[in-house]
View 1 (cartoon, helix red, strand yellow):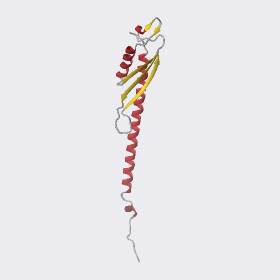
View 2 (tube, rainbow, N blue to C red):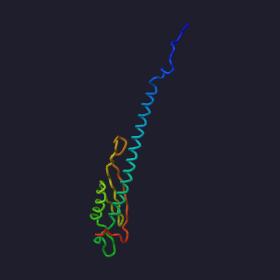
View 3 (cartoon, rainbow, N blue to C red):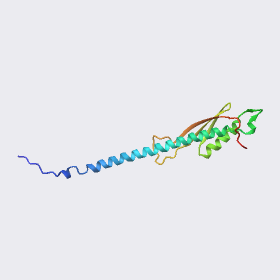
View 4 (spheres, rainbow, N blue to C red):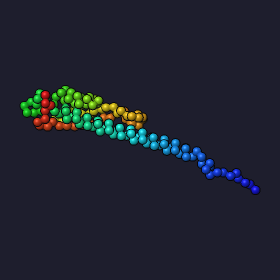
Length: 140
């Protein structure tokens, strides 16, 4: 007759809870990291879009020099400077494209992550477009 040593049920699963807790905590930490990084990227993308729109609106606020005989002729140098002033104040670089009385500004800026890692872009680009409106001048 074969007899088995008596095994206490309380000691049989010893260590399993600790392993499961370690795995769950690690998964929660990775999930929290991804959530924080995604939130920072979303905020940076929203900020870049707002800066691009603001720079485009600033670029089309023409000066009296750009209004000739009732017609508006956007000076690329002046418009570029107005857009660059707005973009650089927020830490972005800007590129200007003019088509008639419509200006498109593309801004590029770095994303500052609390926990940087691969898979998330280091910089974001956004574009904003604005058209010259009658009666809106730069105020200079």
